[in-house]
Image (cartoon, rainbow, N blue to C red):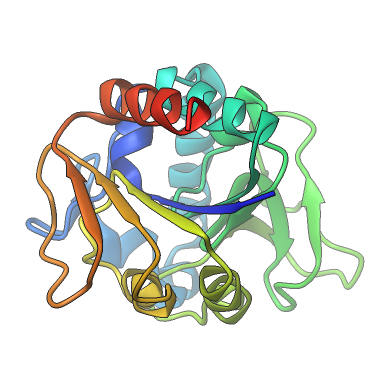
Length: 228
């Protein structure tokens, strides 16, 4: 069974109504990311950071997977599929994908503020100040902040090296180290890029460009691969 590795970014979730962070203005839903998405922000004003991610979690739980998410789940009927996502939502899982790696964490889980390896499901949409882990430290959203290590990047790179087919969906390749994963894919592997604005991929070989929104381009590509 051929292995398809899919790297997804904010563009696929945007079509489900989830607003995205854009490097161009450094704002996320009106918040300066330095004030809500860094370890320094947590030290300075943990309540603000907690409130911000509680709101984001509420948005995620209200969102629904779109046609692109469902199409990727269909691929599992004929391929060994691994989805590596930069997104912190759970829309891939809710669409039915069974093998999803979250590079930047997943907002529907909490984590210890002193040991990021300690993570927990969230019963409701909210983490409250005073909710603690088994070590007694305050719980926070299970997301990787700017300035923190990305522990899943090495396993993700190894998976990309094993791809028979690679798909890049809804990402501008602007956030590192995730943007560098395409460089681990073997040069002769076909690499499909689905995005209305195809990012610059330098000298990468065997690129097939699909300049469409994910909800249009991904189902078309999946249909083509299922009939191959």
